[in-house]
Image (cartoon, rainbow over all chains, first blue to last red; front, side):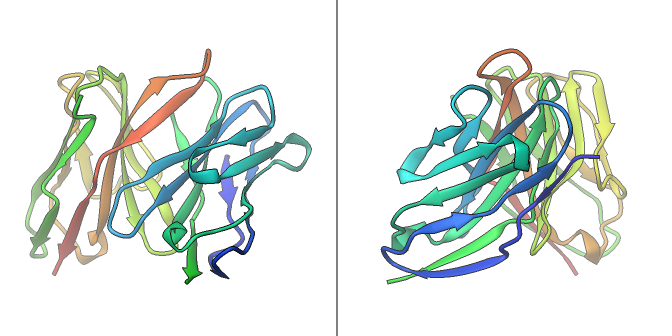
Amino acid sequence: AQSVSQHNHHVILSEAASLELGCNYSYGGTVNLFWYVQYPGQHLQLLLKYFSGDPLVKGIKGFEAEFIKSKFSFNLRKPSVQWSDTAEYFCAVNAAGTYKYIFGTGTRLKVLA
Amino acid sequence: NAGVTQTPKFQVLKTGQSMTLQCAQDMNHEYMSWYRQDPGMGLRLIHYSVGAGITDQGEVPNGYNVSRSTTEDFPLRLLSAAPSQTSVYFCASSSPAGGAGSYEQYFGPGTRLTVT
């Protein structure tokens, strides 16, 4: 069965610090990968997605993620975080050709001004 | 397009009461799904539908019913609410994107349900 692991449950950073959130999945076939962000009191918004091609994907608000197939990983990065990045971040996996998504448990990021 | 809409935004129920959470999308998406979000557990799939008249169970279906009579609507019914169903519920719909077999999911604003 597919599963998604986000190892960092809570992360606290100061503004301008660099961010890397881990995401690993278990599935042997072709996958589509996503990172979603949920700001306090709001619904999930798509940050970035990977379907195929260049494994380094750039998303909105300066975020990027790298798909490393050999490590089954899709880590999210941002070189310099801002206070407004305080939110919960979810990694999700979708087996190619299917509709179903599997979500990780989320990482709560707090950025100190 | 309004995208994915959900009503109500907030609801308080007493144990044993029933209610229906509404979800609608105007993007003509075939696939729709319901998730519940609980602290530390991420989003868990309750039920999903791959088209009108077709539904299936997700990871946590117990205590919930769904139906899909039209492409646009996918209501979630709680037959007899329990405190364990206190959660935030999100509806989502998917469209093909980025090539064959790739789908992008759009989320509604959520319904915060409290069962006392």
